[in-house]
Image (tube, rainbow, N blue to C red; front, side):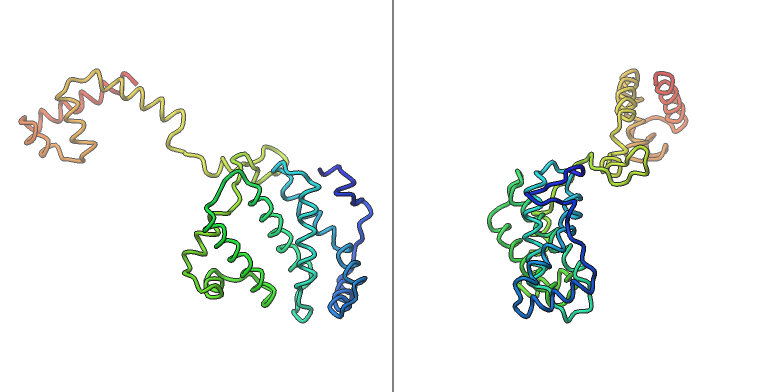
Length: 256
């Protein structure tokens, strides 16, 4: 996708670049009803859409589709932007474009969410967009819950249900050498190949012990009992417990 010049019939090499002053002037004219200014504003910010869809390049989605969906988000941003707020248009536009693309990916995902949960999520997203348009900043969960008059937990559950799945092999850091993937950050450090090998070896070693030795080790190291407590339970002296325990451990060490 990065080497592609034309996306959805648009020559990306010839996309306009607007300065902030030009953007604000076009926004003022568009808000006053100037349709040509609105069109020029959309065309002059298509590079925002292009930069956003590059973030989703690893998903294997069609670039043309993502670009068109991103343009829908851009148009919404143009129509909903409040020129009276002291923020740059790109600061408001990029999250709107990302949100539109995420909705598209969610709706076309193979992972299905219940209709009621999806409906709640749509209402949450609509309320979020409304609050962003009003305040020009990301609303909190509490603000969204208050806007919809629903419990905070419903907002959290709805958003979690539609969150985009991430591949375990998606890179999270790359310094030019070996990239660090999500799997490297969330991998199980306990159930590794080495630990499984040790468990198998330990299981085989325990089979070499007699029943009394296995019971002593179980009472000592699994139940955490003292040698005195073990001696009373097994019916032998503490000295015998100590001797049998050491002998059993040495047998295991030799086998492993």
